[in-house]
View (cartoon, each protein chain N blue to C red):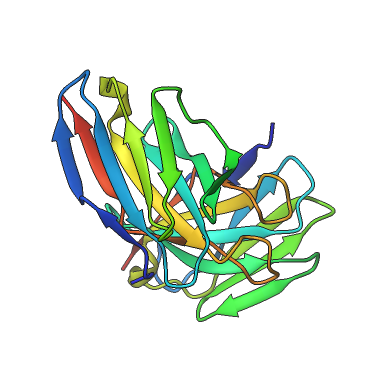
Length: 113
Length: 115
């Protein structure tokens, strides 16, 4: 059974600081997704990582993928309050894309002024 | 706005009842996915349809069923409802799920409360 583990599950940090969220998964997959969810809202796609060594950046967020280590990271640079949300990583079960996603439990991020 | 629409936004019903949730995918997308989000189970994949046919099944209960119609909209039917079925139900769509940049876009969700 595919397992996706995120840590930390809860993170409170101050504006201006840097931090990293980790996502480990238990089976071979060359496709990993990061989503953002605001309270009571839908999931917003942040990144799709397709291959080993993939790195993508959007504003203060940067995601990377190491398929050999089965590890993805989401790095936050100089955090601002607007980035407060829950962040999920997800892997599709069969690795080829034609399947549902298995999600981590999410990292609840609070950024304080 | 992802382009995926879901109705209704909220649904309140009683145990033992049956409800139908509706989803319209983004224009051009052929695949529809259903997910359940609850506090204790997190986000769980239920079922996927591709161009009218069931393609993949996740943790979907036997009391639940889905279908995708010729116009590609999908319905999720939940019957014999229990308190534990209270959750946020999301629909997502993608072109077909296999392309290199294909990804799932999520709808706004239907919040189901079973009393």
